[in-house]
Image (cartoon, rainbow, N blue to C red):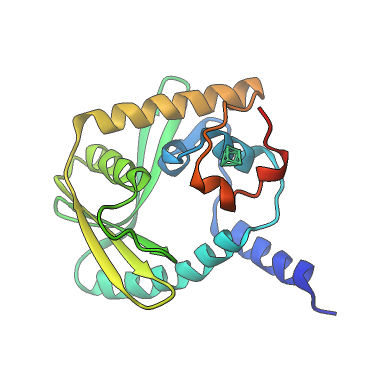
Length: 200
Ligand code: SF4
């Protein structure tokens, strides 16, 4: 019988095949720029069913893969790994595409922000700019619902990497002490798989 549990298992397998599991001494830029560090902590420490949002991220991977081939053909490096040693851990990132001093970050989403990119995405792009010593970043939103595309240019910000490193340190410390960081509540809680058990 095929039911939701079976389909979720397929998605879970896809996720485990396609996302390398991280070691204790590695924190990713994506984890550090999450609006809620507690969610990043739980994502590492709890087994969870993929949420609809995560499922849509899986669908978004196909768009990324399709575009990667095109970008490679135009001389871009894709899936560029960056790493920055910080005390007793390494801050890691993977940039969607980079060429000369320009980087691209693709975000497939249901709701494209109309006026400005999400602040967590800006912070991520600025951290990558600093780690790559690049000068221009573009966040490219692709709508999964209507095919719309929106591009935002992001400028370097010297404080961004410092901020990301501070957040990464907090998360690393929390993981070391097995103590969840304080929750940061906001609209993102709506799609958080840990909402039912997230108490202060
Ligand atoms: S429910 Fe909200 S505050 Fe709690 S872990 Fe999830 S995102 Fe963070």
